[in-house]
Length: 457
Image 1: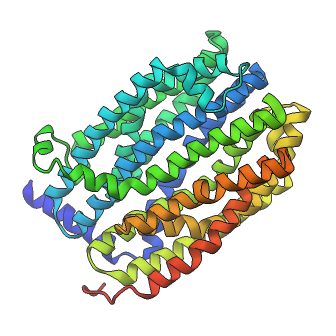
Image 2: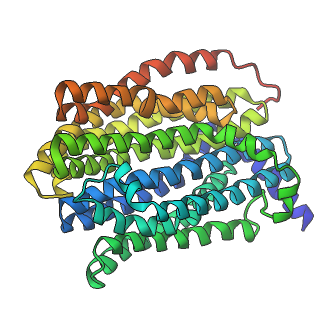
Image 3: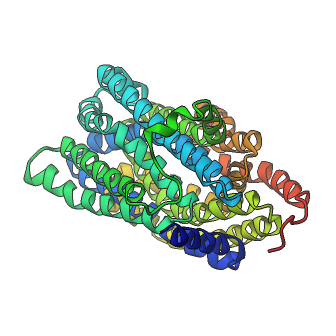
């Protein structure tokens, strides 16, 4: 048994350090991309089915999306933080330390998730108003948000489990958990909303149940010995201070997702002021569609992360460079194809979710602007993921704050004051373009300074 385990470990090391980087990134990226697309499809399914309940209900999905972004932010902080460390430990052939960090990450998710869930349920109405809910949207946002908060501990932990699996190079196992949960949510939405006549609460219940099932499947991969890192309560005592290293490494993800949530709050509030519920509904739909396309680039980028971490830990720096450039170019090609299609059918895409002239008019303009800016995304995504994966936490944190915080927030506040609703529609696109020009010199300078390999690949 021990010999078989060692053989499997050696084969995994060989795969991560010797396979052509193009083959490796694609092999790890395809399952992640599928997972991202399925996750976004079931998020869009919520928007699609709930839209039949009216503009206020559609707006509620956008409001609660901000809450889900907060939960995801913490899940990604613990998952990306632990995953990056685990991949580097495995690259250095230190499985025991990898298991310690995996256990710390999951325990932290359960505790923090439970805390957010309880506090959110106690203060649910102020929370929904803070997230951008108008008085007419509030009843819908509350009904939907209750179930999201109840499921918060397992949802947050699922994000962490998924990311640890990816960083270990087990993207296929991560895909299984997410896709099964996603398909069940798509099936559950119409059943709970219409058959059981639960309305928007049915969408929330369907999402919560699907997250619980995903959690069970992802956790089983660790319990069944499918991973190199192990989970055990006994390991919590070995290096409790390790949680601070996890948080420091994952802090860029918290900034990125957390600022995304804050930006969504600001966007919803300003959209409501400038255009009412129709504007909130339109921007909610636009964000879902844009993020669905963005998920393609993000999925390939997440296939790059374990390659970068593992080879950086193994001190094979040439493979870090090669994988970065391959991922960047591939992302440009894939996103470009999606953007062209999206540009041609922008109004039809908005109309699929809400056949309201005001929503379509507002959404079409914003969607075209955001799609145009997606051409600038791949470099920013890859750079952020590179720095986080190799432990360059300060650079990663700065870049993660750039798009949705440092640039977006002042831009939307200024443009909305100057141009009203058009400022809301155009702010994200402008922030994305500016982020590209800030990121490019930083990452190319870093890549040029990487040392020669210490171990020949």
